Image 1 (cartoon, helix red, strand yellow):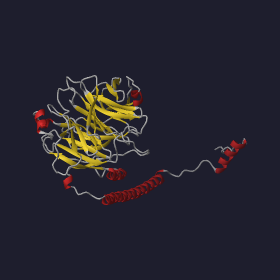
Image 2: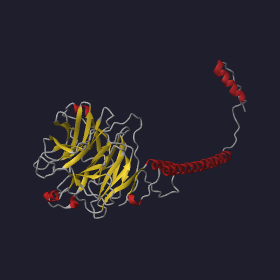
Image 3: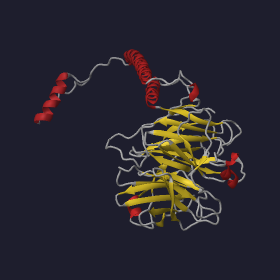
Image 4: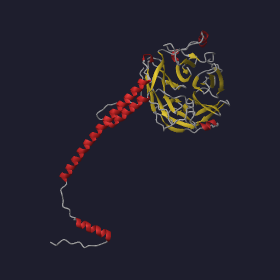
Length: 471
């Protein structure tokens, strides 16, 4: 599979006709992109179908047979050394799994049903997980799991205490069946709120953890799909809503949601270049990442600035409806799964990159800077990659910047000399043309006559002019 960075893509179809000033602009911006690009490396590669690692033979038999090719990762959360994935697929027995962030083996690990210490997955049992969807980890290390339920079981919210032996609790039963999509957590001094989006519904669901109460807030006819929340340190906080099916991005203040409002008033922020943003993620600097249906790229937007999206990642041609799922961890690492629904291999890849940003739920020290994420370069085979030291990397960047700076100076000097030569040539041509075309005519007004007119205007002196002699 082909990976390529995408920040600036230029097609130099007619180099001779290109403005040299534009060349300088391009070169300088390419050098800046090189200096800030993230470097994705491959952690795991599943050449064939994904499959489960059952804790016991009895567990495997209990869940029966299924088709591994139906497994598709659609949601992700990362905490410590573990990655959690929600899976989608017809007939799959388990929809929530975990895998380690690293492994001593070169082989990609199988997916371990989570929690693995107990049988919490059973289709048709409304007291167990039916279909895990959105995932979030809160500040105290609890994994929140949005359970879509089934045709007979209403949707639910679970928490799994990752710091306490993966203790699992069913904390709330929602009032409806299915069609839940994603959630974000608003942790305040007055309590914790979860904001939940549903597939194309014209409302969001608000859940108050302390009161164990949920309600619906209608969004004025805006069908909501993806959802994201501004960083914890940025008050007043805003909730971003991706409209379905549309390119439109809206925001609403969460203050009214916290107070129990049943009506929200979304404000249009801008339009993405692609439709159906199915996954949005905010980091603690205020940068939003967004993935789109059947699109092979991820875009970003610095929410402290007017809406203007930039490319973050592009990966060849799209091969499935939901090609990406991603999350940030507390060390500033961006984790990403890339799923391939075609016969080509690999079937699925897990990638990571250091981006220097953390989840939106982690407080950040006050700063005027907002993370600037530019294009990324993916290295699909980290086993063959020779890691560069920080010193050599910095030297390469300095050398590249110096080269482009010298080149831009040379181009600027050439342009200056060229323009000066053209200007001198033009002035000489104009002077010759004037000398040739305009004859010298006698001036009918003498200096004495001009002086006489000035005296008359200033002092009101009327002087009789001498009439020309009669002929």
